[in-house]
Length: 299
Ligand SMILES: C[C@](O)(C(=O)O)[C@H](CC(=O)O)C(=O)O
Ligand SMILES: [Mg+2]
Image 1 (tube, rainbow, N blue to C red):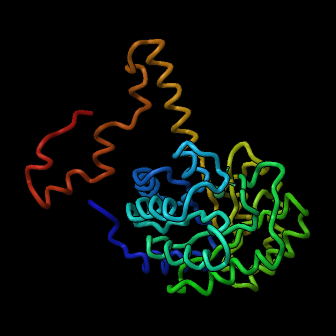
Image 2: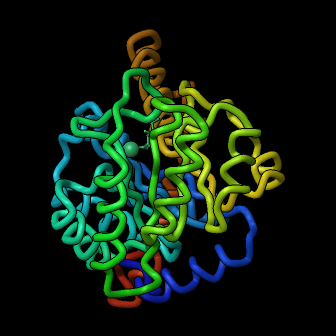
Image 3: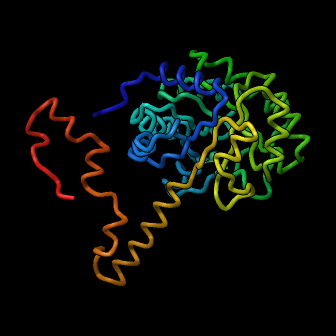
């Protein structure tokens, strides 16, 4: 009922403990607060909040148009709906190192368990597109240093994403990952790795947790959780997948209305009213007023 009862501090602490165990944590991307609840109900370890989803949701391309206020606001709405830790995509940090510092404090206040900042230039683009550019080493490290300095809860996870693999190659990615860790990154997100062996190279290079991005229609092959666990990955995200599935289904449903004049043939594919009410704990609101949930929903 209402919002999560686990405090942000507890979510961060539990997230850190689970990361320290070395197991692979599965973080599907929530495209709204309700889908975060579904991710929790289905037994996942955490919720990812994608910049690509956040901008697509507003009808915008993922090129750094969203503001810190928009990202922190939406991330808060999602994070508070689940007991799970939520990891948010902070793109390039929303400005200079001092802006990055403010970004961290806003995201802490929004109840996130952690975030990642990348080393792309502005305007940025999806890490799986051609033609990316990255900032120089000194700028990349400054972003991470100011992020680490700004946090007030040591358990708030500062993850550094590097996009340099696609620009300067794997050796450059190894070098940058090591330096980002030295600058204070708690975890590394090596973007657009081409195969498992590339993940293994990064795994060997750094001691901190590593994230694998299993976004579809990109540069990386889609590996299974077993394959990723085998090479020592600690967090896997499917950042845009649930939005892609939902939008695909929505498009097909609209065609069905046009073709069949009704959605009767789609009922089996829909989340049932009863399941929705269970997910939002409608019945729980009887705690306040016993007449709130005094009906039954036939399945
Ligand atoms: C992970 C990512 O940063 C995101 O915003 O979700 C994107 C995902 C995508 O566009 O497919 C990325 O740059 O990989
Ligand atoms: Mg992104």
